[in-house]
Length: 463
Image (cartoon, rainbow, N blue to C red; front, side):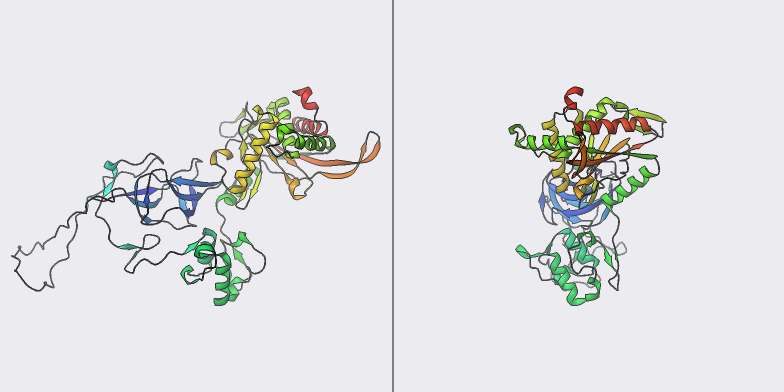
């Protein structure tokens, strides 16, 4: 007998209440196994693959790609006993008429009732499943096997199943917002994949005005938006990373009183060190950049002034000092700004720290940053210099007391040893929560970072 089990969207381990469905990794009719990748979701901080909780057959996909789903909502139905026997239907006779003998041959009676099937009632189990541990058959709801033909998302259809349309989630969203049926679009991608250009070309042929905003340069940040009738506006829903980032920044800006101090300094010695490390065989397997030295300098400063490594507990009216440093590095991704952190960064030597920075950067770029990497940061660096910006007044990451902005390094005239010379110069800015950090402490921390960057041998003295 088939056993149908509904699987609800679990918490991805971040305590969040919702997530966006990015890509279904299975189709209706697929046979699946426990821990097989089931669906890729986008949370406020990262992309996460949800594993399959059971062995069985996918019978229904209850949500579409691109939908925002609350944690705990049903997203897929499995038949966890697909090879079980199909029960014989029980014929329900009218109560008003006694059974009468069936003639040996006759035409079917027009008033004969349709067969019905008794369905057991669910015992009220919640259906919650711990991901990766499967389900108990005793908790499953049993009902007869469905014989209808399922369309791509569980809707019943009397027609035969058509060939699937292959397209990536952003292309599907673009087609949906433009009101285009993907099955009417001629694919040009490899293997018959419908590309974004195919959708745009189809829309131009059918409704040119709706694509005024999409003409010209590639603008992926508009793909999930709705274009106005005159083509002059695109409204994009605020979701996932950008939504959570906005909420966090507003909460931080209007909760913690921000103060920023600045320092312009000569970092020629740091640039010389970076050049030497790039030629060092011990560092051949890692990428050495000035950011690496800045990170190490900040760790030295935190060790000398540990009181800056704290958080303000407003609910309990306490200052919580942390005896570890989870160093955050702000990273810009196509999905928005995220701040993954290097756990226990204070324990690492320079080479290991370089490995951790490389891994953090790679994961952020590929959208594979695990949720745990964005939790429990203690202090952050934002490298605005990569965009050619000299400095800024960064907003604190919620729950942290300080954030360091690292500006562009430029060759400039500078008074060095009493004469004007061309030197490598940069600017640093340290924003801090004035409830936790007063001006003296903030200034001392920034001065220590600058001291190491100006003369890396200071690190040996402070070792």
